[in-house]
Structure formats: structure tokens, C-alpha cells
Length: 269
Length: 205
Image 1 (spheres, rainbow over the protein chains, first blue to last red):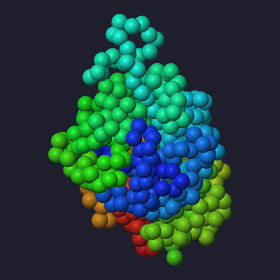
Image 2: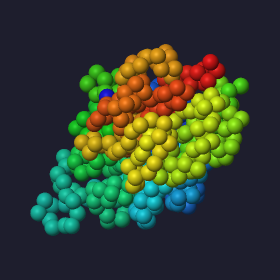
Image 3: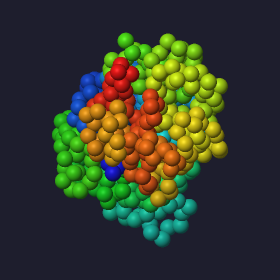
């Protein structure tokens, strides 16, 4: 039986792992290679490395870091941040990454998702989507996909440049389009929930799960074990990504998976 | 020293399989030059890229590969590299494979999420398969694929392990010195490394 995945996320800035609140106020959280090995030993199913400032500053991703990680790691890992072209993708994959995640460049140039999935295969193209809720009145007329949440009705706006810029794009529609273009997975992060430890945006995950036929990786908001359980059950996500609960030692990956197993979620222990 | 050639179709991650083979005690060379296999004990078809382009590159080398095998060389196909060993694929059109195993590569059924992505169990059908030494039934391996090898009935004896995802499909097949896995052993942690070590051990036999 296919198991649900737990994916520690390492946000990398200038070769160090950092963690922020709502995508800002970055704090140092350790050496990427050391952390990668530690999580692998704890039973992580995959890892994600995001070069958090790459897109903003227009830098390429850190190829040498990818090589160092690939040389010690025997589980899959994804690299994102500042990837804008087929050549960027080729360089990262050849350095030893299994998948790449495209965010800003996919929004600005959707044909990149199509071309990349044709060249490298859908299974290594992750489309990463950063969203923020826009609350509306139930009766208000809008061309956006509105859904009910615990705080009222909203639609989800796509943000680019590491959460710095709104696009006024409907995230649910964008997700469906990205899948049609060839994205093999969606990695969904919420600016409302990131770093808050209040739980994942379950309303968003539920809406997405109903609409797309590719695996969904839930991101942003994990604060305790039930948050992860809920994302994978109520939210219908296939994988849960988390950062600070692992970086600061609140839980090990194995503790999370043992808890999930106890609640009937299939995991690799 | 066991020498393994990893065939490069110029798309994707080959560093991990090279690392995995080296960690298993082999010397691994990544190359697109098929002539290099004359100096090698084994040839690996890696699991990255799309069928049409990889098959096009392999078709021109088909004769060399055939004489390599008849000369005692071993083959390991991984993921796409497994699918290339079948008769034909429906990925991106209709393309011929190397036809070492009779069967057709088809898309996974639409009642499950595609790609099949993540860690799934294998059910062992033939414990005597050299790749499976000390690999327990029900082991979890890492899969990342949208197509699978639908084997024809004559190949029933070639299936060493199978996996359920919307459909039951072969996850390890073998015939003589030709082996293939639908999962990625180089990305499957300790169990995956064990399978690579078993392959290298088989070559040393």
C-alpha cells in the first residue's frame, strides 16, 4: 500500500538552513547537509530544499549544495528557488536532485511547466504555489473560486517572489491549469498559516484534493501532531511538509510517523 | 573490481545511481558512449527521462547490447530503464523497446493519483531472485512513475515481485542476467542499497 509521506523542508539562504515567520524574519537553523542526514536517519520519506531568496535576488540555485546532499542521501529530494529555465532544471537534476519545484517562473511563464515535464517527465516537476486568503461576503459576485472556511468565505490568491507579490490569480484554477500543463505534484504553502503553528489550511487542501489528480504536498502551519494527521486525513493531502517542528527538535520525524500509524495512516516506519 | 556503465540519455539525475553503485562496491561510469560497455561487467539503464527519446538512443545500440548480454554481461533497468526492456510503450505515442520482455508499457489507471509517487510495498513472488537476498516481503521502496509494464502471459515466470497501485503491476522482473525494477533502489534507503548490493554480488558470482 502506498504510504503517506513526511517531508522535512530546509529553507536555505547562503548555504545555511533558515526559518522565518510568514516568510520573513529569517533565523539560522543549521547546516543543510547535517540536517539532511539527521532527518534521513529519523525516517524522512523525502526532503525539500528551497533557496528562499533566490527568486527575489535573481540568483541561481546552489548547485554545489545539491551535489553535497546527493552524495550522502539515499532518499529522494526536491530543490526549488530561482529556477527559471530548462537549463536551470537540467543543472539541478544533474547535480543529484530528483525533482525540482517551480513557483514564480511557472506563474510568469506557464509553458515552462509544459516543456519541463515533456523533457524530464512529470514525475520530477513539482509546481509550488504560495497562497493567501482573500475573504469575501458570501453574496459578493466574483470570478474567483470561493469556498467556505472556519473564518467565513474566501478565495485564494497566488503570491510570487517568495510571498512578496500578489498576482490576483485564483489559486485553485491555477493549480488545475498547472496539472494540465504537466506538473506531477503540487506543493501548496499558505502565507496566512506559515510559521504560525496553528495547523495547515485544511479548507484549501480539501478544495484542492477535490479538483486535481496529482499528489498534493501540504505545507505551512504544522505546530503539533494532530495538524499533520488532519492535513493527511481531513485535507486529503498525500504528503505533509514541515520545517520548524523538526528544526527546533519539537518532534522527530519518527515520532510524527508513529503517531500517524497509531491513528491508522499508512506510513513507512 | 566490478565495472558498471550507467547509460546517460542526457536527462536527469544520474549522480544518485552512481553513488549507490559505488557504495555497493562497484566502479561506476556515467557515459553516453555505448562502446564503453566492452570494458564493463554490467550496464544500468537509469530511471530518468521519457520513453521516446531514451528508446531512440538505445535502438542504435541494440546490437551492441545484445552481444554484451550474450558475452555474460548483466543488465539492471530502473523505472523508465525497466520499461525500455519491454516490447513496446504507449508513452507519448507508440514506440518500440528492446523486447527482452514481452509486454506493453501503459499508463496507470485513472482511479488513482498519477504519478504513483512515494513509498509502496512489494509482494515477492520469487524469493530465489538474486536481487531479493535478505529483502523481506512487504518491504517499502520508492516509486515515481506514471506508466507501468503490462507483461504478456508468456512472461509470468519473469515476475519476481509485484506492487498494487490501482492495478497490480510487476515491480521486479528478471530473465537470466537481465534484471529490472520499477522502483528506484538508489532512492529507497537501506533496502534499496541492499538490492543494489545484491546486483553487484550477482555480477561477482
